[in-house]
Length: 345
Image (tube, rainbow, N blue to C red; front, side, top):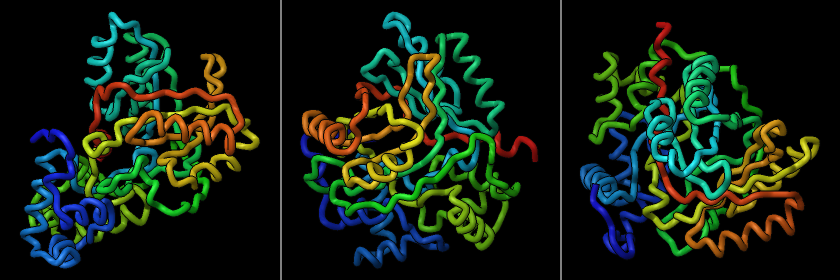
């Protein structure tokens, strides 16, 4: 992957900008999707594919393909550990060695290592947590309870200080999430999800290539992808943008001590605010001195501006005790892994 120095926008023209910002979702589920993408950009399908390959090489786009929905497909949780500095690297290496761990960040807090773990079943997820606990000590386990707004699709080719700030007010519907109610997937759907979890092949016929990989035909694959979108196993299909490369590197997870009886009211209100990129309810863990129930995430290009927005939230929207956990280092960032999905077939 090439590295970019200085302003990352310099190598881009208006067509690149449209490709990045217009196709973070909505890529057509059809045998030759780059025909439609190219037509919308007034270029050929080959030119559209060439531009995407270049954006991937530059590191502006991390991946192209589906964004899978871990809480729907398997059993997923956010978790954290408190690691002494002299053991930090060793513990990070152990946690990152699990394929089921797809994100891991150092955060500026006593709970200083935060990771996301997704397994095929809750039993397997919990077994991995037990193994991590044996190495790292007490694990703070915080599964998703309610989704108010979770969408890292946002325009980046701009001068905005905040991701999502050019969006209008979002409509938020509280969506309960179960730790144990998994999607009813067919063997074909399981194989398909495994085949695309790292992204689509970079070709003019990605669905055909996937079909050949799993021994199926393109019509069957297209139909299955459409079904997985309808059932929310796949959240979107498009360009997954590298928000750090594109300048959104001041990222703060803010945790709020909102009373449970008011959580939906405040979560729905705050999730609709344009600069809030993520908003969800996770359970408090009072036995681990963790009273927080509402999580918000703000992705910004300047930490001072991000702090000002958090001050605004605390003053105008969420008059509750809160803590600000800035991410200071990315330890691992991949797509969620679902290798266990087909273990029973």
